[in-house]
Image (cartoon, rainbow, N blue to C red; front, side, top):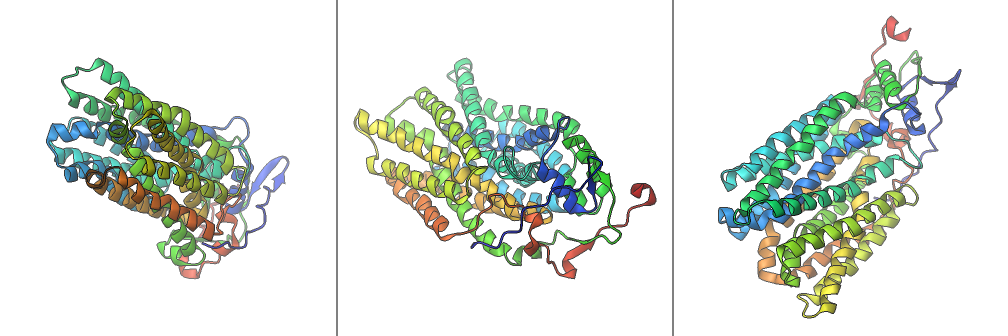
Length: 500
């Protein structure tokens, strides 16, 4: 994943009488890169695009708290419990490939709406699951929706955002991380509130109500998306429909462009998966896959297992563990994510990665050394170890896990590129969630020594890499434009009415 020569700064839109002129897809990208004006609703699109990320985090956090009650209710073994926990991530693997391919083939909007329907149905089925098998199937379906949503959501974030400064493509992509922590915090607060009102003798009611509640925000997102969402103007333009792309920009960015297509439209690269094997994309993909696998494994090991680990290591009650988890999410993880967004738009992308992995090594190393604490100092070190890991995840690997795949691929390959990254993430998470309960039973706190290898490997990989996405727009990179004839499509001629 070595550095490649960067293209010159993207040109400003060509203006005529104060209005930008659209001659080809590059002009649409230039308008987007310049940023929206007053009167558009691009920010609403960005907020809605993060809705799927919110639901993903909510669902994973819910089961991290209720997995012990699920195990007791269905009388599951440790391995069966791992299957329940890993079902969502296994669904993400399949959904990522399907969602990434469909996002580039049929467009962003159709996939964006369909995955929310999947969320609603899966959440309700999971909440009322009569058997563990039904629960596993529902969680798999929910993961499939998550896998479909993330490629299209990140594509929207990139294709409705400016290139530099506040609200940049990189910052918007990195915003998935604080959104994740906000959802995790809200989930824990909901669980805490439900725990106070539901009968103590019916522990299954708590996890069932928490899972089913996930359908509520999904329904809200469906209703709001139907009013404000539209197809990506960049995707539409690179498919040849400049008139429709310009109309979307009028509504989303408050800009009124003049459409004047070139007499001989340039060829537009097709969404051909084989292009992912053409340099420089394979080198980028390998680096992204390594970073994603490492981070997804360590994150699931620490975050998903945190409630159980805190309870066992600190001898804390369920309510005490829940309160500690809420505090860590709100006061440590969420600020870390906000810091990551700020760093992503201000410094080279590799720097937060290196700092984050180094701090995670310190946090996990402290947990491994202390193990089960026997005094207040040891207990404080354990809490500090968890805090260091999740804070570092927020400003470092967490933010960059989406910024790198989102900004390494051109529009016509972005969905597939992100989908492949999420597939790798799903593999890492599934392995962690499937086998960590068994490993934890046999290794105890010595498990942290195994987890320590993940951020250590991430740091080595980042130091060896030179690829950086800071201030980079792949649609403007000449190295990604030189596609062979078999991998291009030509923009259709516009009608006389469209030309007028």
